[in-house]
Length: 111
Length: 115
Image 1: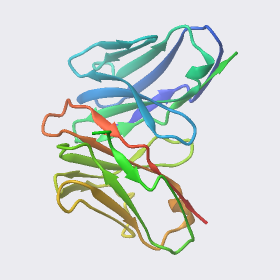
Image 2 (image 1 turned 90 degrees about the vertical axis):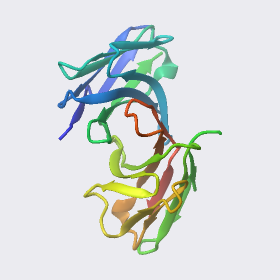
Image 3 (image 1 turned 180 degrees about the vertical axis):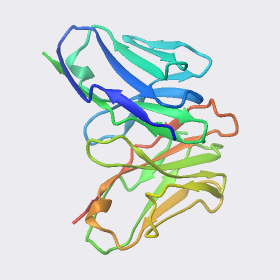
């Protein structure tokens, strides 16, 4: 059974810092891994999708990496801004045709 | 096509009432998922459809819950005899299935409050 874990559950950093969010999964037989952002009370906003054959994806100040063999992904946010404050969710497209989510990391950027 | 659409966006109901939510997927997306998200948690898988066939249901989907996708297009999720524990965000996603490396797109969700 695929399980997805995100550490830390919450993170608070001052504005301008670079930061890394972590995601681990138990079954390496995945198809995609996707990072989402969720603002309070809102739906999911897709940030980056990494296909199983890829190692990383970049979009602006965001970079996501994927290491299937070790069951890990990281989301790197450069030069953080207060507007980056949100919950970040990692989702794994498992071999069982389901998308499994972690519990998220709640990020707060202090001005 | 403007993406996955969910209706209503918010629903407040009294305990014991029945509620129904609708999801309109992206055109030609043959796979449709339902998820439930409670406060502070990630979305949890409820069920998914390949065209009109419901291929898997989570154990979270008690007998008070039923989902349909009658013509392989839009889907409905009905909750009968709602309980306070049903209060959550219900999310729908669609995907062009067959190939498993296609991206799934999520709607904005329906927030249910049972009072």
